[in-house]
Image (cartoon, rainbow, N blue to C red; front, side, top):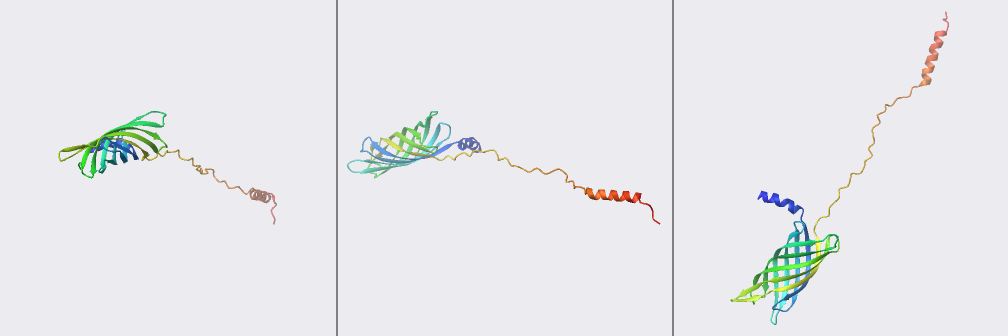
Length: 211
């Protein structure tokens, strides 16, 4: 277990994550068209490969009922195709999801598989415009009868990068440190006082003795 953590830790530290909000149309093969809403979290572990986990709510209609499909969660592998000096890149993804159907007239749940492809356009450093097309496969079974919920979806939305901005380390500002003054403070001599004493000594030496 420790060895697995040591191997995965450098990969996770350099991964890039994002949060996506999507909405569009749901086009079932055997039902009338409905709508689809999705919330997606993705993490690009290496330069081009990553994984996604999400939640999706879609609807479909027939002459009697409105079928709501709640897929929670779905998970898959994503692959990016980026090009230098271009503000957009392509992606593909595929995976599986547990879907709950309401009402349960034709069954209560099924395991959905999906494949999708699309384009992401960089609006800013942390925001992307997303357009994608996906195909979904799944069927329910009740009382020995199966119902297909195969469909295709066209979604558009926005993606928001969760990557923290890198802080550039600048050079430390030059500090003007005042150097200590090593020169000795020499007190000026009182030259006038010294000259007076020399003159007084000379006069005493030349003076005649008194009796």
